[in-house]
Length: 355
Ligand SMILES: *Cc1c(COP(=O)(O)O)cnc(C)c1O
Image (cartoon, rainbow, N blue to C red; front, side, top):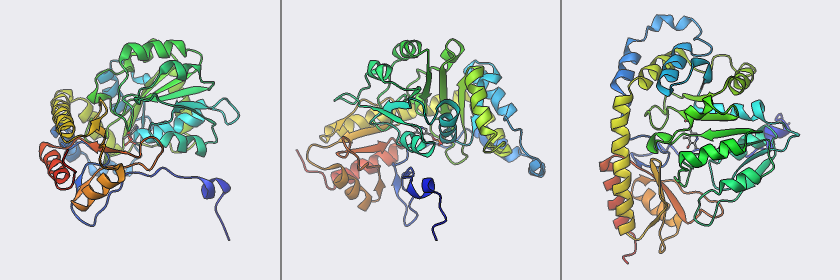
């Protein structure tokens, strides 16, 4: 017997980067932050009252919400917290898109969860190709017939960022439909549109604790938007799980978001390593896209993307390779600590053809 629904049997799920346990790898494949979370977040974890876990957490994560609102400079009711930003992006589909509507528009080369969410919620996909140089022509997205648009800024896996003035013009031109900005990598770019949600009610900005806040293991993300959009997310959340953010997570993330000074220092380290690594890859013949994120998207004219990935893996270094049209010659390399990046470069020197 096949007990699965047609949807469950037919869907192609998102494939996350591998997390192998067979040996110790230099792990540069899932864009995790190489530095530990804030010591204040750790202190909040240790101070957490274990005996209080008999109670359900605050459904809307009120304390965390207030801390995020203070950091973003928006009212608390403009913040929605979820179990990772992936969960929030998923909720966006039933909240803002109809199965018999015009669909969701996004780039051909972008976060590969978007088409999976569309398929799962039966929302039509309106795919807009990036330019030859992997930049996004926003006017093409504006011209695409769709109920709403999803843009990762900076984009993944390219790393390319769109400056804030262009984003604002785009949000204004798309006033009649929802604009979802996935700002997972914004800490490394520093041009967040979160404030614009107070001016444009069609804008939803989605952020995560996984990358900039070094908390991928705790699973927390949030959205910033006007009352209409936040209300839509709340309605859909309460059809799946009224308590998506557990009590420990709320306490830890609230302490993290209040420690902006620590994260500014860590982010500056990542950005300076990114620039050093970019130069070192270019010196080895790689073509590297300009990155505003915590990873580099690079291809070597004399070595195929898959071959680079496999040779690095054999040497104990994990990077991400996508078997996809347009990008199969590339590897996406997370910026690690100085030591991790040096290990990557040494591994490359072990097999790359010398030009
Ligand atoms: C990592 C990432 C996310 C965040 O996922 P979480 O569920 O918050 O860990 C969202 N969007 C993009 C483009 C990402 O790369």
